Every structure is written in C-alpha cells, then in structure tokens.
Image 1 (tube, rainbow, N blue to C red):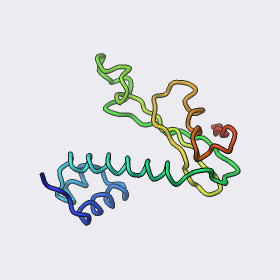
Image 2: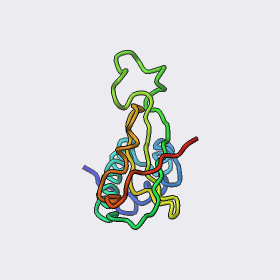
Image 3: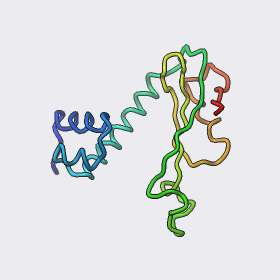
Image 4: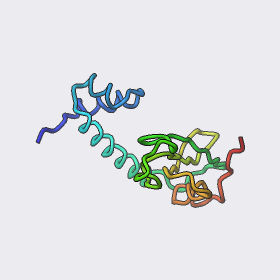
Length: 138
C-alpha cells in the first residue's frame, strides 16, 4: 500500500482549500480521486476532533445561525425513486453557528432540510455558556 508523503498531502489539501475540485486536484497532483477523497475524510475527522478539543466555553457575546443549501448526487426533483429520502441524495443543508464579531464558526451541522434543525447546531461545549443562537432573517 502506498502512502502519501507529508508534502504530497499538503499539496492536495492546499489545492482543495483554494477551491479546486477533486478531479482538478487529481490532475494537478497526480493523486487518484479515491486517495484525495480518503484524505479529505481523514482531514475532516482531524479538524472536527481539534475543534471539539479546543473550542470550549468561548467568550462570544452573540451567536447567529445561518444555513447553506447544496445538493448531493442530484437536486431533489432529479433523485431516482429508489434513493428518495436517503441522506446523501438530493438537498443537503449546512447549518452554521457564527460569531458575527470574530467570524468564527464554533459549531456546524450537515443535515437534510427538515424543520427545527438549526436549533440543534449550537448545542455543545463550545457554546455551553450561552442561550439560544439568533437565527438570521432573510
């Protein structure tokens, strides 16, 4: 089994952070798409663990909720019948808790669009000392 060097991993992560797609990162770095995806999952796990460990009892005075819509596989209306209702197919929302003063995102959650999801985003040790976040109003 081949292992990526630290320099190769840094090159891949840098390309992804700069907004390149997995396919273009594969072309630029010569790494396989599956390798890049595996690295991305590992990076996400490491970042979540770091955030859980370090972002605790923040001195934030205001927290706002926001949401970002995206789709996985296909937009909801184009999802095949056998995949409808299954997470990872169709509409997906990223709910975020944002400190508007520092722009820090101490908590986030990726879920479907069922009502009431944003209220769960702020629960956790990072924001334990605060009340409910204020949702944005469009």
